[in-house]
Image (cartoon, rainbow, N blue to C red; front, side, top):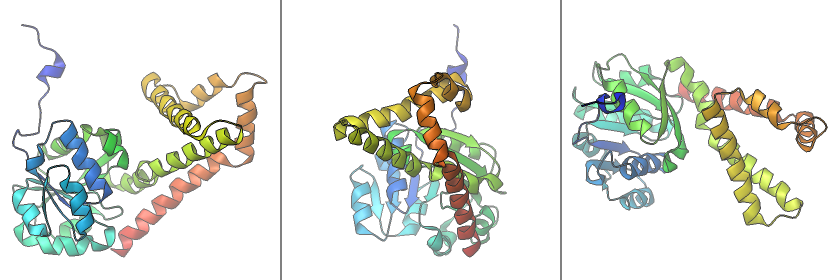
Length: 283
């Protein structure tokens, strides 16, 4: 019987995989929803903690177990996601250090917090992986990059990557890249939302109904992104293919260039990257 390479591909996710989220904010909710909606993790196998009752109520709607006790999250889970603000990461790590064991993997999505800082607060050889995802995990369209710590075992990175690929794309890379990843794809959805809003404002100014303008702007960015990913062409080439000589698009591109459009985006990525580094040095 013929078998495809896809069917032969090894899965690193156990059937009884348990996942815990310390911090139940937007990112944790997005990741949990994505894992549940793809059927990879059952709601009963997810535990979440938070100090904010509102966040716990939101994530509870997914059918997951909730608690205010971070140590309970660790005790109930094989993979623990640290999804709190960078300024409280150390406090959380101190809280859970005594219940961390060698059979668990800890994933941090806290911006700017280096693996070395995390490892210092936990028992020796703790299996730590740092990840920078983004909020489109909510619609299974996340862009994530992971970097393994010194204590990971064979298969740990593959497990985390496979889980994250259920909610988008996930690439493995060096930790030194993660601050730049934060500046680009971590903060990037906000840049895209601002672009959609501005494009729709332009449409409204020119007479389009607001709902139609937003739908057209959003679909245009979605379609352009799919063209880049699926054709493998350089975005500059695709842009040139739309710009007919003397046409409307090249005229519009001239206005964007005069307004510093590309430079502003580059500056935004740089500023967010530097802020991520600053957060890391402060914590």
